[in-house]
Length: 185
Length: 170
Image 1 (cartoon, rainbow over the protein chains, first blue to last red):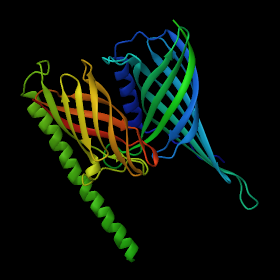
Image 2: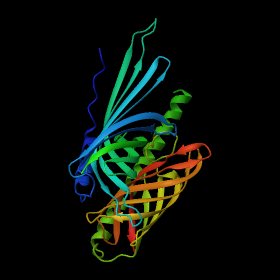
Image 3: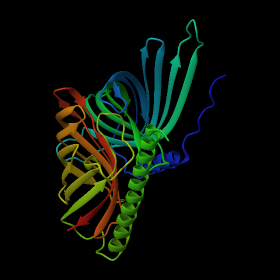
Image 4: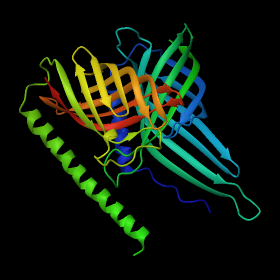
């Protein structure tokens, strides 16, 4: 029997919705009307050890973006899988020396599972965890051609780790990625 | 009680005491921000610079951020930000120089770089922050997320912190 799913923390939900609502207040930039992109990179989970991650996403409307990440590791009979989905809004930073740096703010949904494979003495076991948090994105557009682009992204998915103690206790899934995509004006 | 149980009780007691002390500090900061802020100058007036003290747990390469204790120097950060956009951050996890952009509704973002200290050594690299100012008059309350990325002798390091703070406009 699978373990019961844990509901997202209500405080986390409130924070994520507030952050997303705040993001929507930003003025729109002159980005493309829509784009699709994919890429790869590394993810770190609180320590400085980096694991490979794949990502894909779209941008649409007034600079709204949606990105999905997938990563995983296997240690003998133990395998870990993680998926993060983010939705937010991005705009070009008004820096005096470049217009290629963008900032994004949104909400992230995290699903992680740890599976213990079946052995001769035990059955397969799996545990899932879910969380809802904030997504912060810094994006540097390296190549900006007419219809395609190459981006260097710095994603930070910040999840509340617990509200039973004092404030601001968080867990982070940081992704450094290189991606390319197609855009429509 | 066994020795282990006694030690656990003592540790728990210390955490509770730190939490109570921390709660008092937060309430005091909030009250200062609210009362002094509300009776001060208007936020729309031209400001020259601001000095800020921020506190919040930091994650620096040894797992994610732990509950705040108010006793760890890594939890504190001093800030200077000028109207022209210059921003200086000094914390145990890093010393950075950056350019800050502000939105009319209170949000701000900054990008820059500097040197950092992580559980895995020293490094240098870019830094970025996102924040929100509230009750802004003479004093200004802020909540912000700051992160750094550094290349050091032991590889890539990326400390971060989520902090609350109070800034004084001058």
